[in-house]
Length: 389
Image (cartoon, rainbow, N blue to C red; front, top):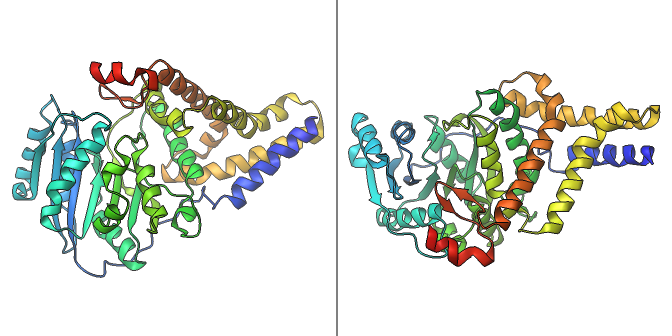
């Protein structure tokens, strides 16, 4: 039984390394200059982002290249002076005329707050007849060539949508332990090579930074088609790809999120917000995920330390080595000590706990909670929670 368990986990890791689109490899972005100049409409949904939005606006106004860039910031009921901070930053950069601040209207039933804000921004941005929409979060500081690089990626291979997994905030002990794993697990779910392959059904995107052709958005049914999606970036990518669009996803080392996650509680909340939605609210899939994570990440070290037999320990040890190797590229991306890779089994336990917590939050009617809104309530609680919100 122990040898069989060792063979299972070893074969699993061989499969992950060599037959899942090489998701674990973090490649440098290789692009040339954009083929032609373009008009870009930037849509920023913002709710209580006064502490970060100024830096985001400034980074967008400092973009290189000859592109025309207009920013549409939708203030989604902020109470902290988000709109004022954005205007002050634009004025300081001499770009006040390139920033339009939209006061968000009341959230309609059936919409998530972020997507309703984006819908309002898109409606106004269309009046400028843009070549591209850039959807970006209010905490993203863009590298000076970020927009040019994304345009080049689309124009060089006639793609419809490209997104960066931006470099996330990673300074505290908890962030160093857990944030690289978030990127690792995300790419395992959505291998970039599979996303870029039009013959593969996998579709995904990183919502912090997405460049998109308006025509592709129209073919996908617009933002309204995903108006209630919790994992909105991947939902949009799926509709675009299934409609014949071509996608690209990669990791950026220079475009960054400046939102600190702080300690374990903050990161746990971030994971819990969407984990059970990813499992389609299925208790069966939750149980299978827990079992799968245990076999994948916990069984190898368990065999090494507790089997007391050479063969299963060797099989488990080999699987653990492959696991460790697969995690090294993301640690290099975040410039962290390679020894963090040895903590991946323990990190997986944390993510398992956050996933179970996500299910519990959903079952009590508080799923997808973010900035005072419940975005993923259990069906029996929808009416009560919408009224409360």
